[in-house]
Amino acid sequence: MSVQGETREKTRINIREPKHYRVIMHNDDFTSMEFVVEILVDIFHKNEIEAERLMLMVHESGKAAVGSYPYDIAVTKVQAAAARAKEEGFPFRMTVEEG
Image 1 (cartoon, rainbow, N blue to C red):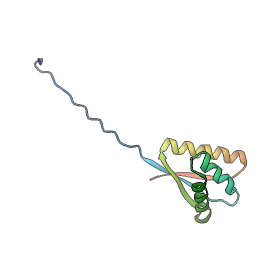
Image 2 (image 1 turned 120 degrees about the vertical axis):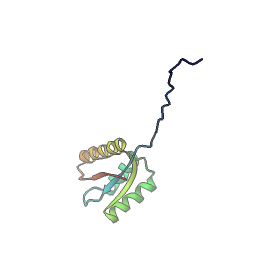
Image 3 (image 1 turned 90 degrees about the vertical axis):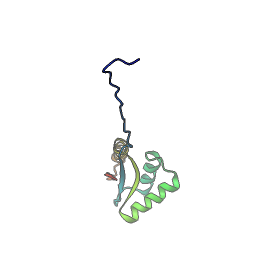
Image 4 (image 1 turned 90 degrees about the horizontal axis):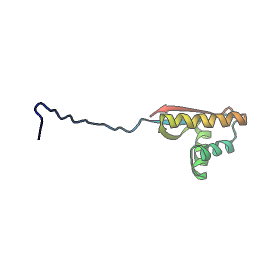
């Protein structure tokens, strides 16, 4: 039974995947290769082989993308890596880029 003048409203919900941001690791002449591998394993959850491959890419190319994440996660990982680098006295640098 329908009441006169009743309107049914349909709600359309568009759920979109959040944009992903690339975490870029930059090379420097002071941060140890072992430290970079440790960061990749501990913070970015790479296995030892992938971590070493990425570390060598950074070393040889000057930089490399080490992962793609929603913005908040990308920034959190970069901050965690930066804090650890500071504790160890390394000038280690990472950036977050859209893409």
